[in-house]
Length: 290
Length: 341
Image 1 (cartoon, one colour):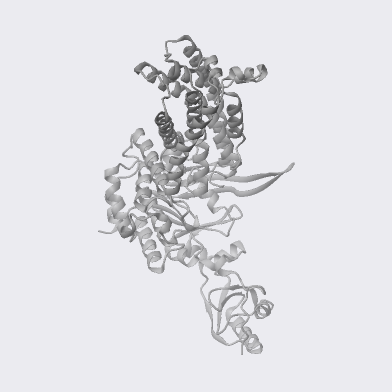
Image 2 (image 1 turned 90 degrees about the horizontal axis):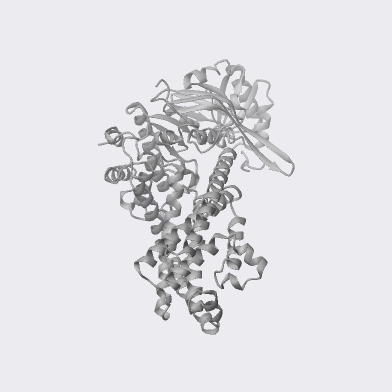
């Protein structure tokens, strides 16, 4: 049978629909296969997780735990720092997922092909970032497991604290979707060099309490730290995992309320920025250029 | 639906800011084009004529400044998802960059099937059929980075057909293919148009290919549609002009071409294949006599000199005044240095 005859038997487009989760699954599968095809990348990712935990474990052996205890985050600097760093890495990967995906598609030359298909642009974006989000979550869990293998972390894991930590993690990511959208909007337009991610990294590393409690900051910087969503997310997650508080606690509810407020204010702005940027590159004909 | 493709007054200008100045480059100016379902239309134009801009607007990847375009009955601005579902687009991208090189050929097609809403069970059978046709079955599970350029083009063609779209936008589909595969691809496109009523918009720099394949040709030049007619009708436009073809034994030297250009009966001279020039003249019999005399004086060894019917290539050159890459006349820098005996 010739190809033309075969084609005559095929149904025309639009008669079937792939369910939304299956489409997202296709992106995840593709991302994993590409990652897995770079064997050295896989090895470095795994080694990187172990080595960064080792660094903070070593640091914990020489840092006094008194200040951590005074700030109300348990007994150990290592547990404090590991939770902070592991969640920060998770967030860093999630925030960058969209802009990195766009940059990769531009470099590979697949951007225009991807967007000339029948799948809507929001689905493509969600699919693109989902694989990297799952990858980041796997490495978050792996980092906590490696940390636990090095000594007692003192994490309080009950159904209520695990659920609370999951809810806070979800709020942590959603509160930063806007930053990811701003970053993606930048990458679409200026391609290389992303000031949004640079600023995000710089401010959060210094001020959000990733490595030390914000109570140790000078008052002016502590005031700035109070405006960053990561400060609240890390405070909540540490309270849950290191002190056993749950969603019912007023401090956790305060953290969640701030994250919700931040998300509801910033997300529409992020979406608007991304839409404007997309429109602009479509006008300039630079969607697929790098 | 009367038209599979309906373009009305489409305009597009690229704007680039340099300091305080904005440089404007018009890419399309008031272009209108209507293509009926099942029509096979060749879209021609020199580099920068606006062909890719037009195709990208039709693919919804580029926003026009003005005008409208409907594809398979759907508006490219308001119903972009339905438009994308209706098209199979083959990039003019050379080297197969538009594929995931780290994935296998089968994984590339499988992923694209998801994007185009082809269910996995259906996709499996279609992928096998397409891989068989394009001779890629044996390489289906190899990474694309190990493929030759021709194999990548075949894979991109397979991808464009996977969801069985009614409209095919083919940007130089035979570039990089070997002679046999290029012929089979042309045959396939011909039968897709004739038997399955697929609407095809086809661009190529190979004018002979377009002439053989496309019953209708549209020519874009500097963003304007300067011709849109059947190939015989376009050739008939040159009936008042006559073409004399001169084939030499050796490569033409620039000085010889310049001298022919200065003959009174010669209007223009273009390279037309290996050691061959096509000369536009007023009256062929008179011109042939004049040419024979001049060529004898110059010592050019002539293999063949005769009048011939105007071809699509002549029409193209006449209308655009710009040679395609295949028909550029030799220049002092590029011409071979052989000396005629």
